[in-house]
Image (tube, rainbow, N blue to C red):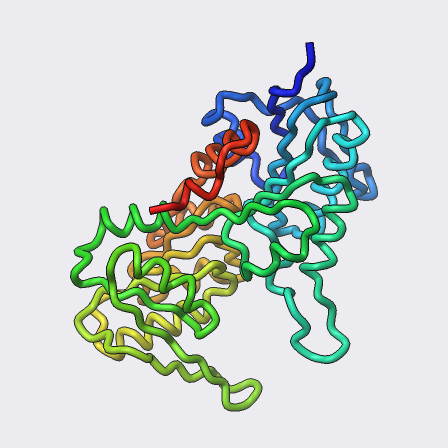
Length: 317
């Protein structure tokens, strides 16, 4: 019997809770596999089930520690390829090197392209990811790439929790306007933009608010929150301009260093993130950080990919 219809889910160590939840949604238990370290921290992978002829999906975010999780992903892909898997899809809810998508100065790398090459050369047949930092990164891969969007989840959440007539969607920088406009359009809300300027290196940034935010509940929308500094400063600037409250909806909660403490102590009413990166204990304990689960979204996209159905129709209004 050919196993062309069999789906196999393989998880690395970056986000086991999300992998389990995806498996539960598509009623497919995770494939037995060992992903461990030798004494010198070399990664070792052993797939403990027959995957020959299977449609395999490797679930692994390249979140902190990014390089360890990236190596796990590459080695799992190699192990599956050498085990005669029919098709290998790298499911990368958070694609970690995405911010290095161009040369910001002379003699600097384009690491997002390098990582795309590594994943392709390791043997992935396709890639699935969520809210890429820049859409054109899809072009760095020479294999089919599905960029999923968390916006339907966010739109549903905003509709449930806000009086939409009082909502103003805000992009925390000029670069994220398209993303914020997309969400604003879906809930029929006006849009404001924050223009960040740093006059000299080492000086704190000046936040200019473009748009009349007075009297509105402001919803900041972005793809990544890392140190949280920009978000906290943006919230202050909006409140100074008369906003009645500021919440933020961000796809990927990187939240490195003292970010959680910074957000907790800030004027942000709430920071809403997805579990594309496994939330730490600190994040779960934070009073004004909430996590939206994305297992159903990714699980549905995996099921549709396996049965050769449209994935993009998931995001059509």
